Amino acid sequence: MKKIVNVIVILAIIFSSLFCTQVFANQQLSGLIVETSKDTVKSGENVTLTINFGAELASYAFHIAYDHDLLELVTVDGGQKNDDGEKVIISYTDDHGGEQTRTNLSATFKAKEVEEANSATFTITSNGLSGKEPETQTYDDISEQTKNITINPDYKPYDINLNYTGDISIKTEKDMKLVVSSAMGEHYEHTRITATVEKPEGATATLMATDLESVEHDIFTDGWKENELGDSLGGKNAKRELNVRGLFSHAGKYEITFNVLDMDTDDTVIATKKITLNVKDPNVTTKDDNKEKDKSKKPTTMPKTGNTAYVYLIPTIFILTAVYVVLKKKN
Image 1 (cartoon, rainbow, N blue to C red):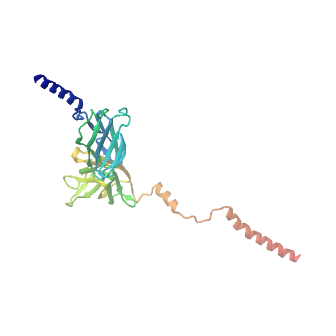
Image 2: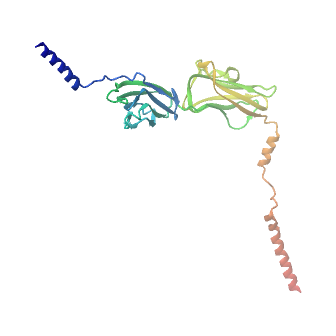
Image 3: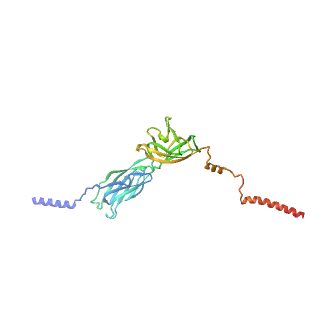
């Protein structure tokens, strides 16, 4: 009886080994790395997101969610793409029996126009991951991985102008407008303006502005800021205008260098520009003034041209002809 039981056990083991299916547990993509070509991009620039698998995959579907208000998909490398408006799905299957596996994929995006700095997040998930041998090399789905980038506006440099009309005369206050502007200016919370002047020998110059408390400041000596904390500046079509009054003692050339400074970074120069003013003495006529007067004078006599010669020639011919006719009749 004991022998019969042993035989039955052995046969059961043999049959179970013949008909039992081998089961393999899924693996994890422990070497998966998500990276971007840049951490910070400007509006209009491209950024490439790359997913390195850390293994050779013959089949996968990666889902990349991104902010369509900030980014525009340009192209993908590593599979078929399907952008459903919330995310792009990049899927791939090796149809050559494991001979064309992949170790990464990439997607390139273009940053859209923004008016201030924005953070954009890529959120990556995946499913259907398998290696060269799908029966033995399967991988767990990736629940979620994220990668952040910063999108900045395409900032334009600040320009400085000193606007006025007419001539600038000595010892006479001249109303002017100091303008700092940019089509897309970088944001600064606390700024101030300084100015230095190169002037003719012995001359004096002031450039006065009045603050909110009706206190006057000479920008050449005090600089300028709307209040103690400084002035904010930045954004699309950024512009800051300041009414000033210039007073200059001598005629000649005055070269004014304006600087816009960032008070939060120890007066880092944001913008600088040298502007030249030509100050005149209305009681003194210069060579340039004479040239302008000469240009404005109208000619009192007609210039002699080929047409002018005809004006005199034609009447002369008529007179000679008439004289000839009269003399012929007398004869």
